[in-house]
Image 1 (spheres, rainbow, N blue to C red):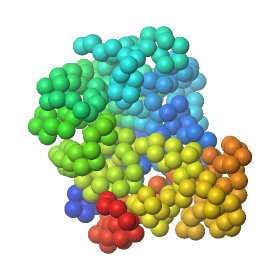
Image 2 (cartoon, helix red, strand yellow; image 1 turned 30 degrees about the vertical axis):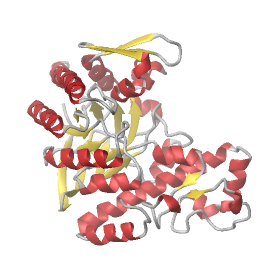
Image 3 (cartoon, rainbow, N blue to C red; image 1 turned 90 degrees about the vertical axis):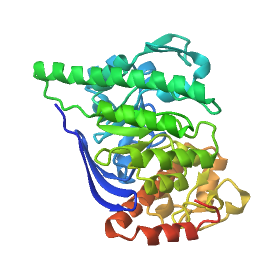
Image 4 (cartoon, rainbow, N blue to C red; image 1 turned 135 degrees about the horizontal axis):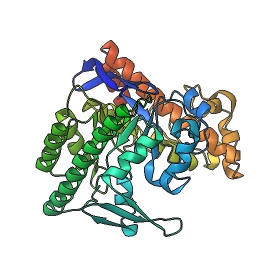
Length: 388
C-alpha cells in the first residue's frame, strides 16, 4: 500500500512550489530537512524541531544500524515511535558513508562491507537489505544504496562507479516492489512511503544524463541529485545541479543531497530542486557561528559569537528572529555560555540557525506562490557581499 504523492502548485522559471504527501504528513516544498543522524538533531528534541518550523527530518541508516540496531527500532514500533518525531522522516541509505568511510569499507558487485568505526565489526549492506531495513523502520522516504565517488575521478572511473550504482538501483527498485506485493498479500495495513533513485556521474554531463535516463525507466517515487560537494569546485558543483535537476521528471519530487549554504539552497531552488539537507546550520551553531535573517547569503554577516567584541553586547543575535535565543537572550549571554562551555549554548545556537534556514525556505515558498520570486532573489543577493 502507498500513501505517497507529489503535486506542483506553482512555478517561477524552474523553481517549483510543491506539496509532497507522505504517510506521516505533508511536506510543503521547497523544504530543508534538518539532519538527525541518530534520530535527533544534536541538542534539540522533537518539540523544539517542530517549533522551529521543520516538516521532515533526515536520519542515517548506517549509524542507526550500528546503534541501536534495526531490530530495536522495529520492536519499539518504528523510527517515528522510537524518536518521538511523528512527522515525515527520510533515511539516507549509507551511500554517503561509502564516500566518507572509504578507508573502512570494501565494495563488490553485491554491495558494500563496512568495518564499524565504533568497534571494527563488519556490517554488510546490499541494495535489498537497505530497502528492507528502511521499510522495517517505517520511513516516509527511503534512499537506494549507491556509490558516491570522490573528486577527482577520471571519466572511466566515474563510468564504472555509475554502472554499479545503476545496477544497485535496479535491484533496490525490484526489492521495493516485491516487498509491496508481499505486504498486500499479508494484509499489512501500514502505508509505505516512497523510494528515491540517486543520480550519480561525477562532473561528466553525459554520465549524469545516462543515470537520469536509466532511473526514469525504473520509475522511482522521487529522484535525488547525489555526488556533489565531494571535493569539486563550487562552479562544477553548481553546473551539475543546474544540469541534472531540470532533466528529472516534473511530476516527481527532486532532492539535492548534502548541500549546503543558503546560497547553495537558493541555486538549487532556481534549478528546480524541492528537498534539501545539510549538517551545516547545526555544525556552524556548535562552533558559535550564527546566521542572520537580514543577509543569509553573506558569510561576512555571520555572527561569530565567541569573539571578544560580544562580551558586553546587549543586543539579540538577530533582531529579525523569533527563536528563543533572540527573543529572550543577549549576545553577551550567549558569548558567556560558549566561553564557559555550557551545553545550553549549543542548544540555543542550533535552534537559532535552523530557524534562519527554515524561515529562508518558507520565504522562498511564499515568493514562488505569489509570483514575487525575482524580487525576493534580488533582495537576497543585494544583501550579500559575495556572488550566490
